[in-house]
Image 1 (spheres, rainbow, N blue to C red):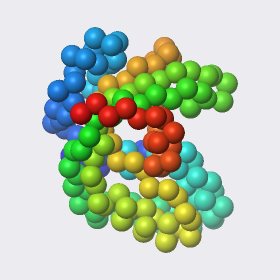
Image 2 (image 1 turned 45 degrees about the vertical axis):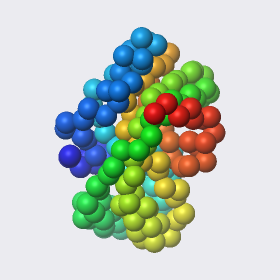
Image 3 (image 1 turned 90 degrees about the horizontal axis):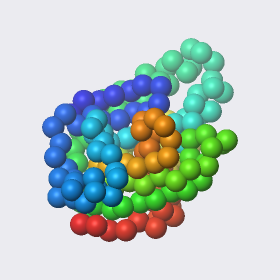
Amino acid sequence: MELIIDEEYYGLFLEKDNTGSIIESRALNEGFRKQDKRHITILGGSTKELLEDSLNKLSSEERKKVLEKIKNIFENLKWEFKPKEIYRIKKTGYIDNPNISENRESYINLVEMPDMEVFYQKLNLLLKTNFPVQVPHITLFTKGERENPKWYGIPIPSTEEFNSMNPEKIY
């Protein structure tokens, strides 16, 4: 497992992962694409945008200090996880681009990850914010309408957002 911090998100890349092999033939037969670089997003999507908005209110020196504190919180947690249920989710609308309406579908494996809650508690305390806790999951297979399959993922920044996708439990 490798910790990643980049412009798009904070996450964990999973080097060896056979999660989802139980549904692989079903997903591929339905036209889904296997997510080769499996990862768990810790902070991304709309929450990463809210973080950037908060940081942009700071001086460059304050911003640098806060980013270093966030990095320390991120790097000092264990990030252990245990796979749970597999769901199929769907989202239609303006997902990443306000000018493009699209349909996306994914098979995801929810995971139990206690440090996700801890990370957001510490982050919210540090920034005096109330960011929702990202739904910890591994995206297994994706399907979408955009030309670049990189854009097939579906951000799940909160439990409410997950529930709005009418998740279908598969396994």
